[in-house]
Length: 449
Image 1 (tube, rainbow, N blue to C red):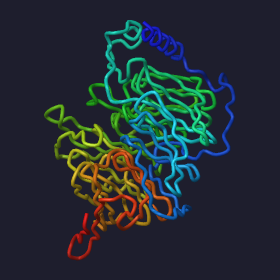
Image 2 (image 1 turned 135 degrees about the vertical axis):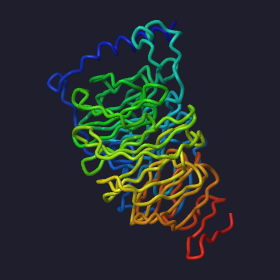
Image 3 (image 1 turned 90 degrees about the vertical axis):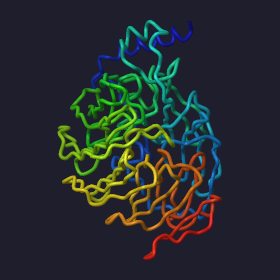
Image 4 (image 1 turned 45 degrees about the vertical axis):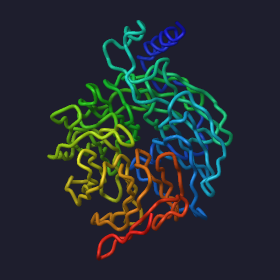
């Protein structure tokens, strides 16, 4: 009965929020002194590279639970969430834990940091049963919702202490990371809506029916718009949706986008990845598109001709976020184990690299090199111009959806439950049992495990 009353309240609140408030109706929101981490992988291009760090030595930290969300870096504080219902803060210079804070469910969103506040969402893969609560059925009809019985939350924490500031509950799960924009947190989730919350209080500003669920697709700020990606029919029908951040109005919708794949933005284009259905529910083909950020119209579209199997190793993503850097868009094709480099303007494929397993993370591009890990536990260093393999490092566990950050002379990386600072090149001293190979004219030259 308690759960029914809770969800009835959610439904009533959602109905009241269907009419979005205008900017004039909304109270002024105080601006933080700085926004350290506004979205997944820090910026719209999804390329988290920072040169002003000097991490003195390698280190490794075992969180004792799977980490599938992105990392966030705020000064010398490194933040991440875990399947163990935790938000964790480390000193990036040493790997020492500063604090950890409990949350109500599995957490795999990237922490968002603005001023002295950290924001995260909770949720896990799973469809919310529709027949146990009448108000839920009345509000959402026959739509398949993703979430947990009792709802999920978006929460705010103090950056220095980990103390909780506020929590806002929704019916759907909140795995996708929010984007911070002018005092608002904007995100899409598992109940077919996109939301804006006041970042200082958690009060809902607007909610918009976006026509599908967003399972793991983090929002992106594309110029003056926020773009989210959603799915409607068992993740086989999908779209990208651009919203006005002030009022939630839908500005355009494109059939290219996927609820698992975060869009990227660069050079006036929104880059998306989606899936063309295969012969069975477990098969598909990768589709990549560049959309005009103002209109949503396709500039170019790539369709793979190779059908592959859906893999649930590391995560159950069917589509994967890409990265834009220096006029090139880097995108994995998880159904046929490839990483591709596209000319961002024309869609011409510059190179293909065959990986040993599906890549389920965004690559990072720094100093003419591409860094990316796959579900076979291999971390690749590739020449960004040619795709040639420069270095191969072998880890004990699959790489899942948490992409690396390049911070000065170190790479911050997640492998299973371990977060580590390792050299951008060479064998990591911090993680035992990791082998590596330097590529030469005679091929890989492997070290011992």
